[in-house]
Amino acid sequence: MTELQLAQRVRDVDASPTASLNARTAELRAAGHEIIGMGTGELDFDTPAHIKAAAKAAIDQGLTRYTAVDGIPELKKAIVAKLDRENGLQYETSQILVSCGCKQALYNLVQAAINEGDEVIVPAPYWVSYPEMVKLAGGTPVIVSAGIEEGFKLRPERLQAAITDKTRLLFVNSPCNPTGAVYSLQELKDLGDVIRANPKVMVASDDIYEHLLWGEDSFANIINACPELYERTFVLNGVSKAYAMTGWRIGFAAGPERLIKKMKAIQSQSTSNPTSIAQYAALAALEGDQSFPAHAVDVLKQRHDFVYHRLEQIEAVRCLPSQGTFYLFADVRDMMKRLGATTDIELSELLIERAGVAVVPGSAFGAPGHVRISFATNMEDLDKAMTGLAEVIG
Image 1 (spheres, rainbow, N blue to C red):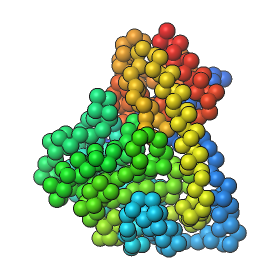
Image 2 (cartoon, rainbow, N blue to C red):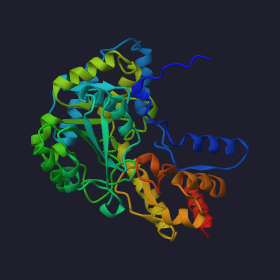
Image 3 (tube, helix red, strand yellow):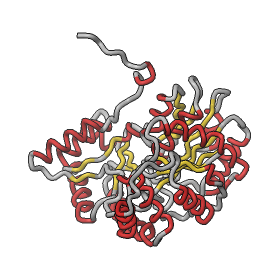
Image 4 (cartoon, rainbow, N blue to C red):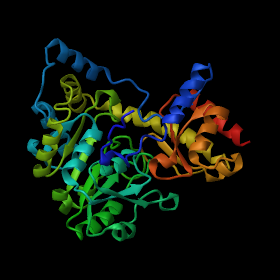
């Protein structure tokens, strides 16, 4: 049999380490076992009615054809208005790119900004796709760990130590997936001071969980903390998390026009425009009733407190409270020892089989010995899951 050639750039790109866990979960469910999923990365709420109505109206009005590659003008104007109103950031529509989710916006940015051999600093724990996006662009992800002792937040001295003459980009994700950690304005300023002193370094500010926040610090991104970085920062966001619209796939980027144009060119050669119907739904999300995100936060905070306090009662688990998102990130190295698991993936498999609970191993996020626990599910299931975890450890 002829062996087909693999492109060199994909040889080191990793598939999701959770694939086998998902398959095992599906197998046990098919056999009639109740498995409570605590690995999900989306709200369990339905998309608000007025947003769905806007999508239906777009279909009825025949707004189902190609749009401009970078998004319909109305949506781009709404994004400009949102960034001004909510974030105090001023942009022109020529600095906005609407993409098929925040993920594509990030991918476009890395493709447009990173050359072969360039280094990109990725604080760990990180969202799973950051390092792989860098690899696909021919860059080198430089992983800088920020553990539970640091509150899972990158310190300026660690950032400075990681910067070399090859460094071109830093990822900042706050509130953070997977940890729920949130950077204060002062913490962002401290990081920004380091970036300011290194003029070749750009910043990708992943703000997708902006509205899912309940900690003491209000939301801020690095431009709010360091306005001087405006010309070197890209703000990435979308409607997926705040409005329960994950499947609609609408995200956006705002930043320096020169690179935004190149990101648009890349998108024109891949997906072209985001789905027209979803764009009109996103327009309704940004311009319509804004009560949904606040309601979601109230529910999530209640769930967070319940799960966090139950985890505190399990001696073999070490955990910090989250300040946002719908995740808790638990140190389970002691639990691994007690249950005889050599890796967090093996522990996750044990938890599926013995507790009927599916979590995501921390190694997927660059933090072995941890698990990500999503509380984006109903209280009854959360209670069952916490009981199951406690019983497994005895």
